[in-house]
Amino acid sequence: MQEASNDTILEVDNISYSVREKNIIEDISFQLKKGGFYSVIGTNGSGKTTLLRCISNSIQPRKGTIKVNNKLINKYTPKLLAHKISVVSQHSEFLFDFSSFQVVMMGRMAYQKLLQTDSEQDMIIVEECMKKTNTFHLKDRSVKQLSGGELQRVMIARALAQQTPIILLDEPVSSLDIHHQFEIMELLKKINKENNTTIFIILHDLTLALQYSDKTLALKEGRLAYFGKTREILTEENIRELFNINAEIIDNKHIIIKHNEII
Amino acid sequence: MRKKDIILYCLLTIVVLGLMILGLFLGSVDIRSFDENSLYIIKHLRLPRVIMCVLSGAGLAVCGAAYQAIFRNPLSDPYTLGISSGAALGAAIAIVLGLDVFFFSIGGFAFSFALLTVWIIIRISSVGNRLHITTLLLAGISINFLIAAIISIIMVVNQDSMDKIIFWTMGSLSGSKFSDITIVLPFVLIGIIIIRIYARELNALLTGNDTARSLGVNVERTKKIILFFSTLMIGVIVSYCGVIGFVGLIVPHIIRLLVGSDNRRIIPFSIFGGMIFMLVADIISRTAIAPSELPIGSITAVVGAPFFIYLLYNAKKKLNQ
Image (cartoon, rainbow over all chains, first blue to last red; front, side):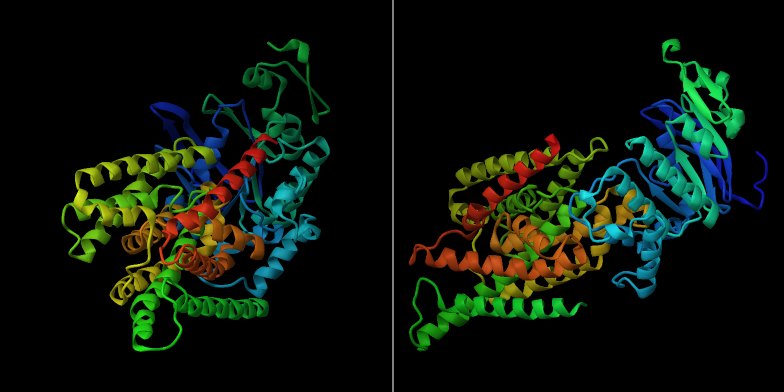
């Protein structure tokens, strides 16, 4: 394992996670650099979400370590870890009618003391984040009434309000139509560039991975099969091996799946 | 605090005080003049009862709001989850064992059994990651069945204690004394304060464990603290008032419609809501068939059970969409 260099923000060292003796992910190691745009690909059940949940400290790996800024994540208090890592999940279920503004304000929790009310500064930050994600006009609407794309933008606004150097996203665009998929990806690219935020995103759509991410982690059966520059990872050959399909890559930008050639 | 809220709190305080005064004068004996007899009834029978009413109402309503967030289930309430019944079973066992001489044995038993019920509920509801509204409710309802059966057996075997035990299963405020209030008050007060302190964390917990954790909430610790103190409140309230269902279900829901879903507002408003609901229920229980009395638990259930069915119907409708 090479030493973490200065611009390494997240370091995953040899982690495994298992459920009832069965390994879901196994011996995964990699490092993320500040300001990188990383996509995670792999078939269903390849361990993508489990990996993400390990990094967000929702579950603890059976072995191995995860460090953020050179400090083990389980040494962080939940609050301080929330200053480093924010998470956007695929589905957000809301039982009751919270307004979009209230939901984005939840992103400020990690900066508030018990019983402290939302400060002037919190209000300003929330407004900024909502404007950036083009959701400010939705601020009084209940999150239960938002469309899929609007809701995901609100969730990204909440992650922004957390002001973290790392944002983890678990298939944030899978349930959206093509137009809204690109809208979300453009937004993430903007955040990545403007705030130098490290983006770690699980994607099903390989074309999106190819067009937006600098680097790609490819998981297969719980192991990290490939990790490197996206263009070098997403080759016709590797796609065949990972997904058992024949694909053609055009102009280094588009991936055409030949549906009659499913292996 | 918003100006509008302060005015609302003032109005609610006036309503609560008004109902309390009304509660002092209404009942099986008409108060027509302030003779010695009437003053005695007001001071020693009705005043403690009215105060107990206010305390239990506030406690039950706040517990309901807390359980709804912790279990991520809009139909949660100390009664629907079987936690109140667990406490009643504990109390019944303490009576049968002849431990009812000391408060802390009945209260302690009630609390321990309530906590045990909470543990069972958590075990059942945490199977799998997804949110299952109906599994949790079925667990609560089954526990209610089981405990009702056990309590019936205990009653038949111990005929002498039957009256006392019936009191716990139906809920009653008639025997309240000032000495009881001095015990219930601190538990309810501390419980409500703790739950209010964690109101923002409860908001986050409503969005799921993983999300709450990523927002910086110490999920396990918060849940343990909230469950401990809310169940302690239930244990103590059930020890003195018996099982009074649905207060914790109805009140937070109505409050939510009025002030929104933020628990930082729901909890303080639920205190008042619970007080008002219980005071009204108590007045009905004393006047509806005067000079006899209806058990207060049956009044809250007559209102609460249909409300529960309505919420269940709505939840199902949403699932089928």
